[in-house]
Image (cartoon, rainbow, N blue to C red; front, top):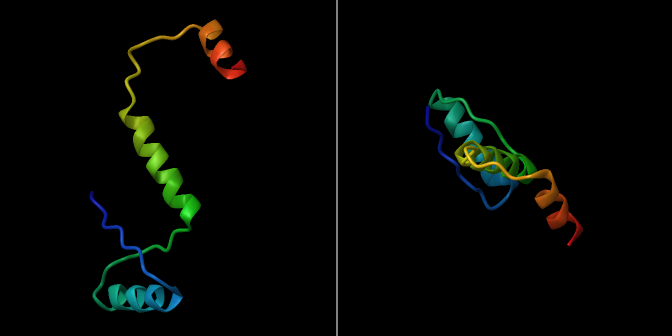
Length: 65
């Protein structure tokens, strides 16, 4: 399934679009900025190359610097 992301300018536009989509028979969900960021991060994590391995020591050195 694909999704369409629309970014309204204000609360009135959010209500208008939500009502319009409901009248047209589409389901919609209002998401906060943090939820959108979490979804984007999830998509990036799914695309990550997991075939490469990194040692624990290497990770700890990066975290300390």
